Image (tube, rainbow, N blue to C red; front, side, top):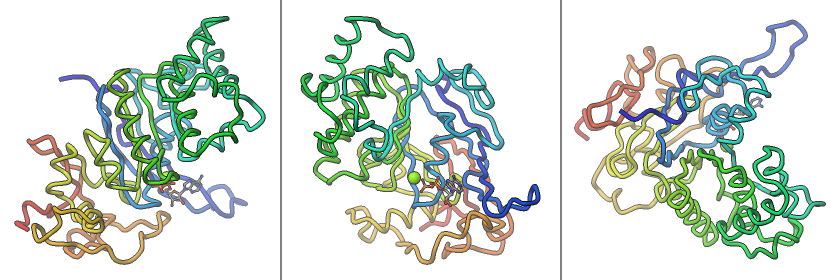
Length: 327
Ligand code: ADP
Ligand code: MG
């Protein structure tokens, strides 16, 4: 079997919030709780789930912007769970992160040439004239005119700014890109263009993506495989088409029920998502979805289901997955 490019095993991230006068007196936010997930070379792994389910925190742990509280993280076979900044430098080149709002990280006082060029120089990848040639090439890759290199961030539209964010990520020739809601702030028409750009770049450059989004339609478009997250844990993973056609977890079914799509019509039981996500400071004991699941039994409320791999390559964390329930 192929080896994963990135592998998370039992990855956990807790935040301590509130009063910390006495050590240990703060309250613990269980943002990510024991997530195991492999990212295979060349795939686009879509990560979906409602707001607050821990997607961003997990993404930041994957790229080691956050240090995990527990669990293990391996990049290309090397354990990077606790690697310090100096040791991480070569890893940081090989995996880049893209955010929802590129403006926040594009210094308004600097030209695109300097913003994107810095990334190249920090890693010492190219020198002198080769830097400028590479910058021209990058602009071409992301569909911007090379003369835009001499403009400032405020001179661009939202979609163009995201293209600059992508160019900056690509500047260091990464293998893996973790994109956190990269199109969520854009107009729908622009979203499609940027989604297409992601797909195009993957094919051209052989990239691997973790694509985080709360929008299931966007994730379906771009992903080869999908992982569904809820309250810090994984509910289900599977190839995109299979998962969307026949979700196994009631939570996935509920998410899909909420979006208009032809598959919903009469084919399967519709599960309406009611109530709020419980507080991650006090997650339910058994299945984290049990408080909102219409199918939950006593077992669900007491015993947390493992994410169980199935023969068909899918995996589901549910005592009574939909297919088995004959729905
Ligand atoms: P998502 O990206 O799916 O919306 P997040 O990863 O942003 O989810 O958040 C997961 C949970 O962790 C939320 O309850 C959020 O409030 C909490 N959280 C995220 N970052 C922090 C932080 N730095 N400090 C405390 N709590 C946080
Ligand atoms: Mg988020």
